[in-house]
Image (cartoon, rainbow, N blue to C red):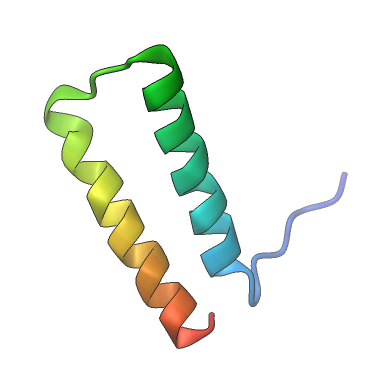
Length: 54
């Protein structure tokens, strides 16, 4: 079994997770309630990693 290495690809991984979460929420009209604050936080963290080049 191959273990995924995230060295240098943290921003791509976070961007993929963010896009999947947004897509699933919109496609299935899911309401996260109080957890809805996690999506913008994930977007901010992803943007920071992309800007830092990580």
